[in-house]
Length: 146
Image (cartoon, rainbow, N blue to C red):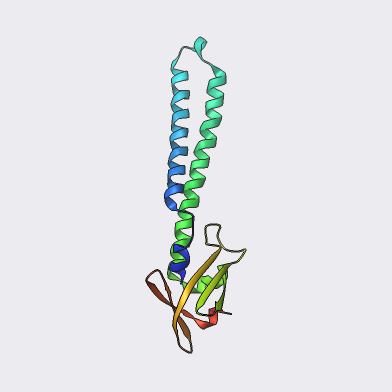
Protein backbone atom coordinates (compact mmCIF):
# COMPACT_ATOMS: atom_id res chain seq x y z
CA UNK A 1 0.00 0.00 0.00
CA UNK A 2 2.86 2.38 0.78
CA UNK A 3 4.29 2.06 -2.73
CA UNK A 4 0.86 2.76 -4.18
CA UNK A 5 0.50 5.93 -2.09
CA UNK A 6 3.98 7.15 -3.07
CA UNK A 7 3.11 6.52 -6.73
CA UNK A 8 0.03 8.74 -6.36
CA UNK A 9 2.04 11.59 -4.79
CA UNK A 10 2.66 14.63 -6.94
CA UNK A 11 6.05 16.18 -6.14
CA UNK A 12 8.87 14.75 -8.20
CA UNK A 13 12.50 14.56 -7.22
CA UNK A 14 13.51 15.68 -10.71
CA UNK A 15 11.97 19.14 -10.17
CA UNK A 16 13.66 19.57 -6.82
CA UNK A 17 16.97 18.41 -8.29
CA UNK A 18 16.67 20.99 -11.07
CA UNK A 19 15.89 23.77 -8.57
CA UNK A 20 18.86 22.74 -6.44
CA UNK A 21 21.19 22.72 -9.45
CA UNK A 22 20.01 26.16 -10.59
CA UNK A 23 20.54 27.62 -7.13
CA UNK A 24 24.07 26.20 -6.93
CA UNK A 25 24.84 27.55 -10.42
CA UNK A 26 23.58 30.97 -9.29
CA UNK A 27 25.82 30.93 -6.23
CA UNK A 28 28.81 29.92 -8.38
CA UNK A 29 28.06 32.78 -10.78
CA UNK A 30 28.01 35.27 -7.86
CA UNK A 31 31.30 33.86 -6.57
CA UNK A 32 33.04 34.44 -9.90
CA UNK A 33 31.73 38.01 -10.14
CA UNK A 34 33.18 38.73 -6.68
CA UNK A 35 36.46 37.08 -7.64
CA UNK A 36 36.74 39.17 -10.82
CA UNK A 37 36.03 42.39 -8.91
CA UNK A 38 38.89 41.62 -6.51
CA UNK A 39 41.30 41.05 -9.41
CA UNK A 40 40.94 44.69 -10.42
CA UNK A 41 43.13 47.37 -8.94
CA UNK A 42 42.03 48.79 -5.60
CA UNK A 43 40.90 52.09 -7.06
CA UNK A 44 38.67 50.45 -9.70
CA UNK A 45 36.77 48.07 -7.40
CA UNK A 46 33.03 48.50 -7.18
CA UNK A 47 32.22 47.73 -3.55
CA UNK A 48 28.47 47.82 -4.10
CA UNK A 49 28.79 45.02 -6.69
CA UNK A 50 30.99 43.01 -4.35
CA UNK A 51 28.61 43.36 -1.38
CA UNK A 52 25.50 42.64 -3.45
CA UNK A 53 27.01 39.52 -4.99
CA UNK A 54 28.37 38.34 -1.65
CA UNK A 55 24.87 38.53 -0.19
CA UNK A 56 23.39 36.81 -3.24
CA UNK A 57 26.06 34.11 -3.02
CA UNK A 58 25.16 33.34 0.59
CA UNK A 59 21.40 33.35 -0.11
CA UNK A 60 21.59 31.14 -3.20
CA UNK A 61 24.12 28.78 -1.65
CA UNK A 62 22.03 28.15 1.45
CA UNK A 63 18.80 27.95 -0.56
CA UNK A 64 20.41 25.31 -2.77
CA UNK A 65 21.66 23.42 0.28
CA UNK A 66 18.16 23.54 1.81
CA UNK A 67 16.53 22.23 -1.39
CA UNK A 68 19.12 19.45 -1.63
CA UNK A 69 18.49 18.51 2.02
CA UNK A 70 14.71 18.52 1.46
CA UNK A 71 15.14 16.31 -1.57
CA UNK A 72 17.24 13.83 0.38
CA UNK A 73 14.77 13.81 3.28
CA UNK A 74 11.87 13.27 0.88
CA UNK A 75 13.58 10.30 -0.77
CA UNK A 76 14.23 8.68 2.64
CA UNK A 77 10.61 9.23 3.72
CA UNK A 78 9.33 7.79 0.45
CA UNK A 79 11.48 4.69 0.79
CA UNK A 80 10.31 4.20 4.38
CA UNK A 81 6.67 4.50 3.32
CA UNK A 82 7.20 2.17 0.35
CA UNK A 83 8.59 -0.65 2.48
CA UNK A 84 6.82 -0.21 5.83
CA UNK A 85 3.02 -0.41 5.70
CA UNK A 86 2.82 0.29 9.46
CA UNK A 87 3.78 3.94 8.72
CA UNK A 88 0.58 4.38 6.73
CA UNK A 89 -1.48 4.74 9.93
CA UNK A 90 0.75 7.69 10.99
CA UNK A 91 0.10 9.59 7.75
CA UNK A 92 -3.32 8.40 6.54
CA UNK A 93 -6.76 7.40 7.75
CA UNK A 94 -7.91 4.36 5.84
CA UNK A 95 -11.52 3.38 5.28
CA UNK A 96 -13.33 0.96 3.06
CA UNK A 97 -15.80 2.36 0.55
CA UNK A 98 -17.46 -0.56 -1.24
CA UNK A 99 -14.83 -2.30 -3.37
CA UNK A 100 -12.24 0.46 -2.86
CA UNK A 101 -9.91 1.39 -0.05
CA UNK A 102 -9.53 5.15 0.46
CA UNK A 103 -6.56 6.74 2.23
CA UNK A 104 -7.05 10.35 3.35
CA UNK A 105 -3.98 12.36 4.34
CA UNK A 106 -3.57 13.41 7.98
CA UNK A 107 -2.09 16.74 9.07
CA UNK A 108 1.04 14.89 10.28
CA UNK A 109 1.81 13.55 6.79
CA UNK A 110 4.76 14.93 4.79
CA UNK A 111 3.97 17.77 2.37
CA UNK A 112 4.75 15.65 -0.69
CA UNK A 113 2.29 12.87 0.16
CA UNK A 114 -0.88 12.50 -1.90
CA UNK A 115 -3.94 14.13 -0.30
CA UNK A 116 -6.10 11.15 -1.18
CA UNK A 117 -5.15 7.73 -2.50
CA UNK A 118 -7.69 5.24 -3.81
CA UNK A 119 -6.97 1.57 -4.50
CA UNK A 120 -9.21 -1.28 -5.58
CA UNK A 121 -9.92 -4.20 -3.24
CA UNK A 122 -9.77 -7.42 -5.24
CA UNK A 123 -9.88 -10.00 -2.44
CA UNK A 124 -10.04 -10.25 1.33
CA UNK A 125 -9.63 -12.78 4.09
CA UNK A 126 -10.16 -12.54 7.85
CA UNK A 127 -6.88 -10.64 8.44
CA UNK A 128 -6.13 -8.59 5.31
CA UNK A 129 -7.27 -7.06 2.04
CA UNK A 130 -5.59 -7.75 -1.29
CA UNK A 131 -5.46 -4.47 -3.19
CA UNK A 132 -4.59 -3.38 -6.72
CA UNK A 133 -3.43 -0.08 -8.23
CA UNK A 134 -2.25 0.16 -11.85
CA UNK A 135 -1.28 -3.52 -12.14
CA UNK A 136 0.51 -3.46 -8.76
CA UNK A 137 -0.74 -5.83 -6.09
CA UNK A 138 -0.28 -5.73 -2.32
CA UNK A 139 -1.83 -6.85 0.95
CA UNK A 140 -2.80 -4.59 3.84
CA UNK A 141 -3.87 -5.64 7.31
CA UNK A 142 -7.49 -5.05 8.26
CA UNK A 143 -6.23 -3.62 11.56
CA UNK A 144 -5.10 -0.49 9.70
CA UNK A 145 -8.55 0.11 8.14
CA UNK A 146 -11.42 1.74 10.07
